Image 1 (tube, helix red, strand yellow):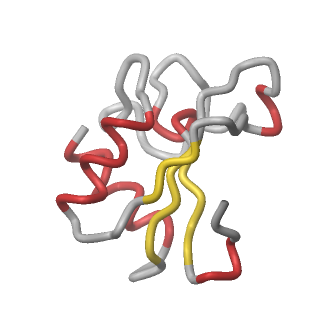
Image 2 (cartoon, helix red, strand yellow):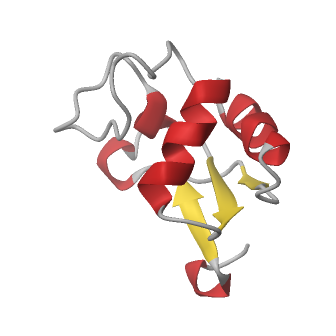
Length: 91
């Protein structure tokens, strides 16, 4: 498992989930959000942006600890929100 201290951001599927409110954890606008985002699609989008994604399948978001959705770690090449918006535009 790669840690955050290794110049990586953690990206959770909840950040792009249209069914989740901003207050509950979505990070992108509803226009950019998608239904049922998954770590494979997020990783593919991050790879197209050359962010060197690392998939970690056995993880769960702290606010949704009953769902092991996994997470994606990406390189810290810019502000996190800017990278999330770029990923969202490719989902």
